[in-house]
Amino acid sequence: MNRVSVLLPVWCWLLVLLVAPLAIVAAISLGEAADGVPPFTLGFSLDSLRTVWTDPFYRVSFLLSLRVAGISTLCCLLLGYPAALAIARAPERWRDPLLLAIMLPFWTGFLMRVNAWIGILADGGWLAGALSWLAGGPVRLLYTDAALYLGMVYTYLPFMVLPLYASLSRLDPALGEAAADLGAPPWLRFVRVTLPLSMPGVAAGCVLVFIPAVGEYVIPELLGGPGAQLVGRVLWSEFFANRDWPMASALAVTLLVLLLVVPATVQGIWSLRRR
Image (cartoon, one colour):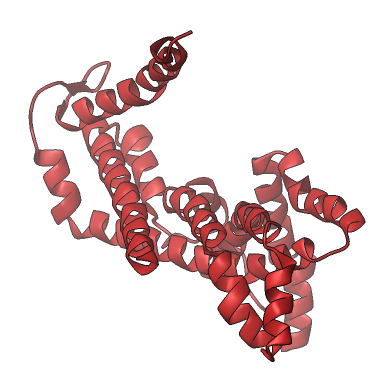
């Protein structure tokens, strides 16, 4: 069996499920909105793309999405790294149960988990009630930025822990022991040995969290307030409410470009640091 026959199914899969849909979305983004089914006419108009880049509303939605995704990624990293390190250094018999605990949320539906947070964060929920009792006054959690970030971190934290654990579990313990023999304290061993060697896992986890978080729709819609107009919500409104398919496609194309530029920039910086 030659190389072409092995790669041909992969190329066909990429062509049908990746290249063709992207080409269709790009073609619609160059069209114009119209009354009818489908609600657009094909052409070569840059009006929708120009509007996405010049209209302050869309620009703010992209910047807000990048900010929310960046903060969520940072929070997942700060919470996920200690968890992954603890699992990697746990006794062998405890690693599988701990990883199972990380994966358990994936065994239930995503919408069910987010809707559960609505009940927890609602004004009559136990968490809001406990915080209100501690604060001595009403505390509102649902439909706030705090609820938005809580939902994002809760949802995407496993995507950070798993690649970090995969990277940390492969580290040779003898390296840390050698640093300890040379007189390095624990914090210095972490900074000079563990952290640099785990950077591939950090980069993989950040990419796995950041990319889907930028285009997230469900969590901002169910937990965020009216001001949480992330690009996912704006795109949904353009597609379903306004039925402006060219504008929605232009938003999708712009989002795709951003999602390609940001990881490529991170990869370029990482490559330059390694040289």
